[in-house]
Image 1 (cartoon, rainbow, N blue to C red):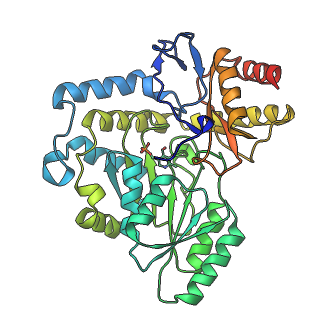
Image 2: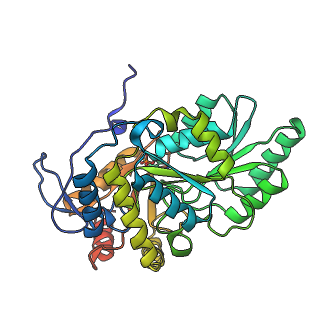
Image 3: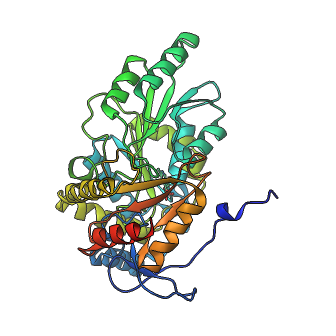
Length: 380
Ligand SMILES: Cc1ncc(COP(=O)(O)O)c(C=O)c1O
């Protein structure tokens, strides 16, 4: 095995909720102080919401914990159908299919839309699950510069000139997990229409918090979007994921996707919690806007402090540092002062772009930004 330098080593650390919202503590390491969570993707704080806990508990008591089989054997429960139907109505897609995780949903998505003759044109920074999907499909991969619509156009043009009878697949994310940036989705969809390409958008970080009423950033784009994926493991505070697409593509997935067919169905308590989250998000359409307003304020204040931040519009705010050790030092310094952030290093992000990833959530204590700025300032 290749020797990994210390600054690149990953460690699994244990965190437990402290009992107060937005706080974790480490039950194993000596430093047992409670830390304000500026790292997880529980953007709306729903993972500990009483409505989700009650829904999961109720389902568990009546149906047990696991589904016990895959969707096509005996694993499909009424709660799965209900969640799929309500999501498809909410998002405006013909059909929604559930998966045990977003990683798996993305594998199924790419494999259902491609074969070894397809050219996939993907943003340079798409999630690892999508890259694995492309690899397993055998499709050819071309990558465009991050969020660069002109580079995408160039690749689409080349592709259509070289293979006029092929339908390329364009892949992007609506809110990039490590950058916090968003592509120009309307123009991307228009280009795909112009070049007769399919478009897949991973909405993992946007669903629940971005777009109209938290429906994600693809909602109401008039040009066709072939498929989106979303996860319940982030803003929805549960676990599991979904693909939303047309009737015909979803039928193709049911008939042919190993990632859909050969896995135990999403645990019913998680599906029940996801449905409870969906209903809370529908009943509180301003939650996402509130988070976005707060994110804008944080970004402005941190930029004023001189931090290098991409042009983000959502709750993910990376402080770009470049060096692995500097990012780890900053993580540690914040941690000893009660703030939990995570240094993100290559290969998760490109070489030379290590960063501290700061993630906002709707229920942070009021003085968190001031505290963060104070402790960042103290160390720089
Ligand atoms: C952009 C993106 N897509 C997909 C996933 C996978 O989702 P899940 O955690 O449900 O497997 C993640 C999670 O890390 C992600 O950040």
